[in-house]
Image (cartoon, rainbow, N blue to C red; front, side):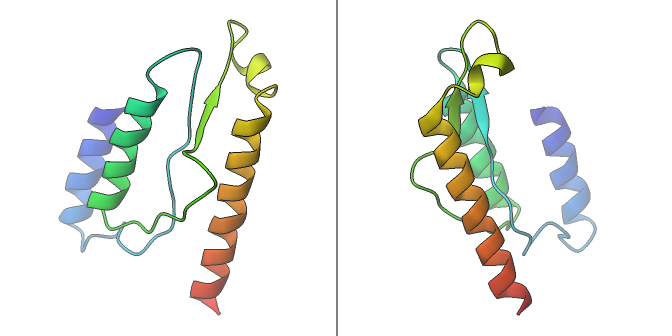
Length: 98
């Protein structure tokens, strides 16, 4: 994933930094450890490309058990955080386009 993102950054920089000014942000889900580091690395990628990242009530991370995606829908705090992030993103985009 990071190799793809590194190439995307290179292409963006050679094409008038076309990612700059866009709105977005990372969301990570993991069974145990690792999602905070992945989230941080992805967040830095958004920042270095000039992408505007709205906030939320917590980091956009979710927990999934051994069942993977089937268990992620049981993480109410994670789901609430991501829903709040999505609402903030929509609100920000609406303000930009108005």
